[in-house]
Image (cartoon, rainbow, N blue to C red; front, side):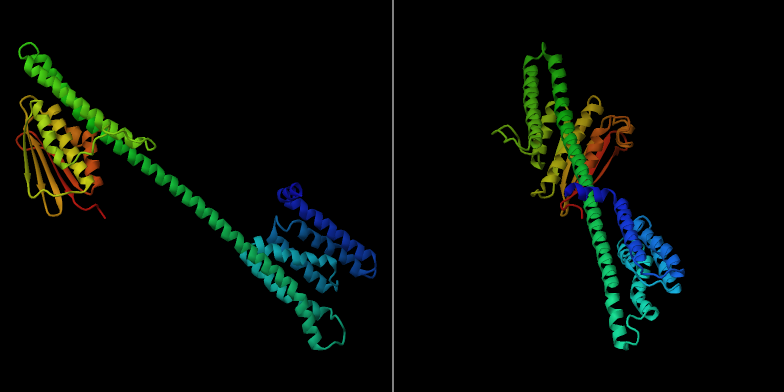
Length: 400
């Protein structure tokens, strides 16, 4: 049965042609059995039967045209006095078909014809000559009901199909939106991890390189200073490894972190330790805090730490020899202000103006993205008279 059902679904026109031939055969049997007298009625009845069979055969391929053909055949029956027969079942079929899959105008036309066909038939061929008007009305209603039911059933099926199509379209749209949101979330997470890795690697490796160069320079002349530089390299390397393990731990969602392997996320209180670490590399840094320190959102604290870290790293990279820097943290009522300045040579123009179009300005891009994520503003550029300045304002409340 399932194979037969699948075959019927794959070949709807073939099924309609089969029923059209079957209906034409029944009409032929009716004519042969003497339903029509020899003469004009029998001659006209043949094309009427062929027309009604064609309506059934092509009802799904051209429902609107078949409706018009059925109306034309009905008018021919009225004009040439061809009484309704078994072939007129095609009119019931086309009414249902047009109400289901036809155009709206065709569906309305089929409803009008369904309501008027029985009345016209009674006017042309009275069922019982001499009967009362009540009998005529009753027969008309009985003949109209099947057509109206066919139209109602077809229109209900059309509404149901439209509803299911709407549900499928909505499900497909929601699936596309879910995939788009997933891609955006993945891209944002990748960008966040890339910024974290850049900050960890750029800062700590820069400190290690500076300390290693200093240790190599004073190895023979001042062994104690070389030893201190090596200790700084060791502690900085451990800190970098700990922070990188923390980032990798975020990616390993199914792994349980080992005790002591990861470090807490940097915050504002650790900026002073960061400045002390930078001072050990030989860079003079003036650090001040203005206002009353208070707890801040974790995102704001991490952003402040990374901005200061990247700014001091850029000073070491681009400030040149004998450069000095100053770091100011200002607590406002509604936010945290950062001001990092140096008196060095300053960074190349494309690093802060063009957003690193040459591939070298990812640190500045990361700073701007971090500040933007917490709803803050950042301004970076050369200072009047030399050096470089980075100022940022981080609100205490997230945007929106």
